Length: 71
Image 1: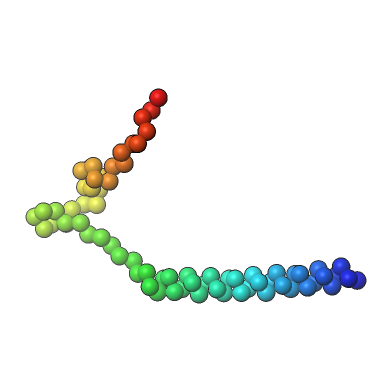
Image 2 (image 1 turned 30 degrees about the vertical axis):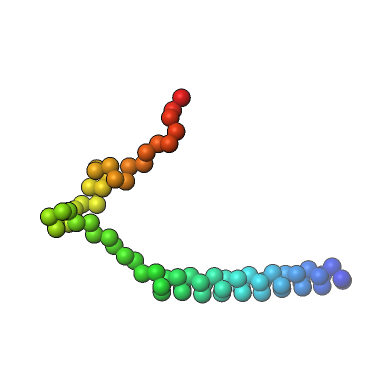
């Protein structure tokens, strides 16, 4: 009988903890969504026209330089 009571108590605590945890993380998520709006960066050329987004890759600005040399 004692093991059944302990099992029910632990299961109840687990369910309550899970509900509280989900509620807390949902509140954090909604706060994050409210404060972090999507921002789209538009890159312009020197003459003022919009450049395609892949131009930075083509120019080599975003190219990763390997810090290790292959052996």
